Amino acid sequence: MTIEQLTQKFQEIYDGSPWHGASLMTLLSSIPAEHFTKIVTPGKKSMAHLLEHMLAWRQLAIEVLKGNKEYDVPINSDKDWPIPKPVGDAKVHYLSKLSESQESLLSLLKTKNDDWLQEQTPNRSYNNAYLIQGIVEHDLYHSGQIGIFNSLLKD
Image (cartoon, rainbow, N blue to C red; front, top):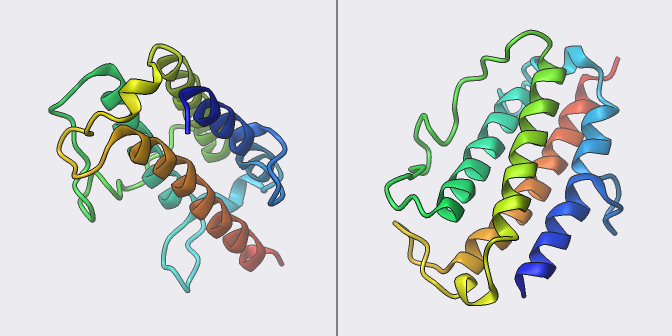
């Protein structure tokens, strides 16, 4: 995949028209604000937990794109699964944080060329193409969970 294709994929799943259904922002926009922080018993997590986790991995990609070789998100750490602490309305908070991370990711991806994709990701055993494609897939995976959580919380 090329930088251009990855950028298009990021945009499509974020707020475009992906083949599988609703984009992340379409899904989140349709969810009542009070659902964002409610714990869902099967997973014992809230949508806010999932969004914090998604944002943590998006931040890793942002730091890699910036060339920060020291930044890391150890799997199953507090950095991987931060405790949600939304400021004000949780829905507004997470829509804003996702928008900021999306803008950063797309802006930084545009500064890279296809050769950068083949470089090894710092602190990982894979290349940058794998990381960026992984972030896309990670967002999709957790979007599905958010949709399920929302269904479970409906009265």
